[in-house]
Length: 167
Length: 253
Image (cartoon, rainbow over all chains, first blue to last red; front, side, top):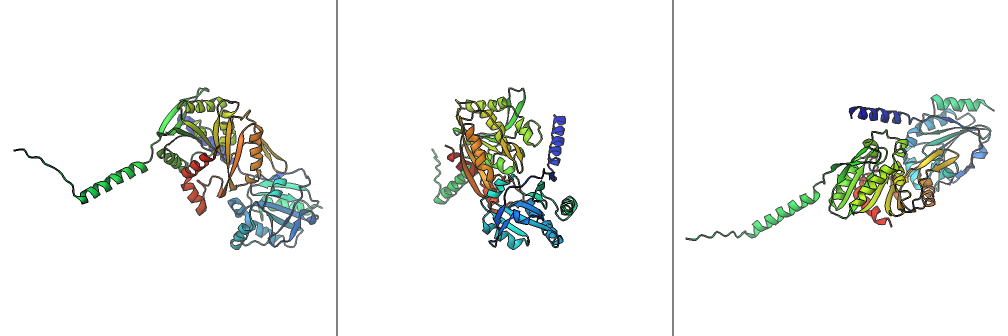
């Protein structure tokens, strides 16, 4: 019985360790359409950013990992201010009021788009939050990540820099 | 000389006695129902240990914990339900079988073993309702599949029965067989990444023959009764989990 308990503990730890997420290289497919309004009512279409590298980040205010990566996204935005780089935060399935309350507390100034009815979330087949996509200058999906990362350093920054170097 | 002693309590004494009696009744009512540890021999040869919260009522709730195990709020809810007359059998299948907390562990539990649990429950003669959390939906639905004669009411708390999930591609759902004997109420916290997909989950259940309805739980997240950093509302809802289970149970047709 003791051995079974130990084995269970080891397996449990292994299962939890295996949950760490990483970037997944995608096959460069064209992403589904994305056209949404930001909180000021301005419309943003992903297609309009052709020629730039785009980070599309699906998130929600009630999601702790989403909130966790917000500061690094803001730092990334500031770091990339003079580069061909755009960040679009797609707020999934929440009313505009919830977002407004959240943004009183968390100061970010990148574009946050409202997907209140989750229609775009469904179209992009997003099953977990946060989920992020890196889109290259040609408008193709090159990487996805379900889970949290530090966007202004390490692997995330290296992948973005790599995409910026490509035509 | 016959001396007959009579005790005529004063009004004050009577009031004190009535108060003490009321206190005793209140303590009895509030006293937590003690769990009995029960073992059930299964067709696979395993022995399943579970907690039974006995009650005198004619209703039996089979409570299947998620792959993350039982939370204190769930144990407390089982005690409270039993104190109010609903017997509860509470199962932490993965802990009982020493399996790691993973979807694959839940998926690997044998249908005939789960059927044995349902069989033992039905033998009590009580009206059985099943409550399954997250991936526990998988063994429960496997155990209920292809049992046309055994109508069962099931509460599925944010059920999770994807077979595959691919970002940008889509999701597939597990097939269990015929669920024509199942009346399911899907309980979906609004604040969940699964919320945009809940209608697909309902469709998957209906396609397999279940009668499946949705109850959206507003302003809470998955596992609101056990979350770190819970909101005030989630804490309140978690504290009244027994009440909520009773309300949900009444909604299953």
